[in-house]
Length: 180
Image 1 (spheres, rainbow, N blue to C red):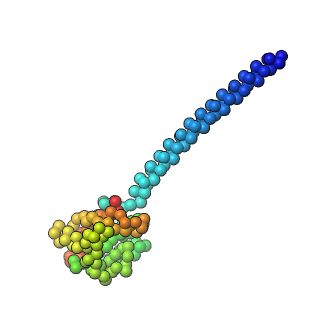
Image 2 (cartoon, helix red, strand yellow):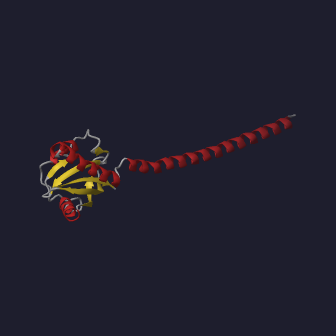
Image 3 (tube, one colour):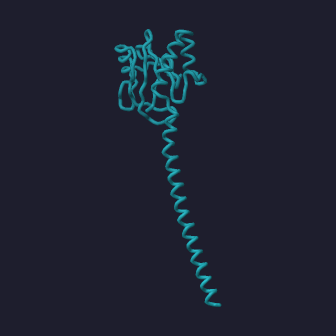
């Protein structure tokens, strides 16, 4: 009888250890699945963050909309609206408008209205590139186009590569930039 009980106890112990081993393997498998899911979510975060940035198409559309708005309501009212952050048709995530005359004077600025009235003809980016001069040359030679430079992102507060679409209207130009 004692040997039969020992044998049953031994079988139960083996079953218990086997169950623990299976449970351990299951936990390892579940841990791996969890790690893969976490990695997938982490990889999706930059894609989601990219959704928070304006696109080149949206920047061009905003400039076109701004030019039409200027023609509809006049420069004074339009420029005031460009500076109004509550106006979502001219402020969208990191997209905002700026307007300069062909001498580099700020006529409107959607991110920093304090710049209005100031000459920024000699403004340079993080690499020393004369941004406004380049934009003036671009609009005077081609009428419109893209200018590349480095500029602080108002959303991330970091210096980032930026491209701005600018388009000439009379003796000034309207622009909107995207962060890359």
